[in-house]
Amino acid sequence: MAGFRGGRYISAEASARGEWEPGGSKMPGADAYATSKQCTLATALEFARETPRLRFNVVEPGFSPATGLGRDANVFLRLLGKYILSMLAPHIKYWSTPKRAARMITKVLLNELGETGIYYDEGGRPMLGSALVRDPKFQDRVVAETRALLSTIPGQYGVDKQLAVVAGPFSRSRAERKTP
Image (cartoon, rainbow, N blue to C red; front, side, top):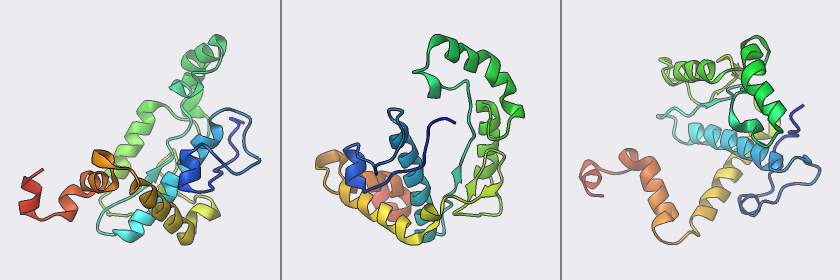
């Protein structure tokens, strides 16, 4: 309905160039959006396997018509989404509101069971991603290719700085953490 046909991943490098597998959407940016979601899910599932002491979960917040997703639509459709459809969202399957999504995400974040590697739907229920996203080989490939691509970035934005920021307190000793 929205024009998304699923992720069209070729490689991290191809994604950085804006290249996707053929047969995708005619909507500009839809393949990039769907592929970024596909890779985010694969990465989170890989990180959950790679570092089980941390929690990595993914949330599908549902479609929220009052957000900027339809910002390129004509004025009538934008107003319809913001003022009419947003009131109906809580009552339509797979739809949500920013407030409802925030409550659900908070619930997932505060999960006392310590579950990791779970993909949650808009109602906070575990769900399955595509067969490709669930494949550990695909997850490994996405993460390995992304790390390799980031390692080619020179200077302060290179992978060493990026990983130090992301892993910070988990990867360095107490003495190392005191010095930037």
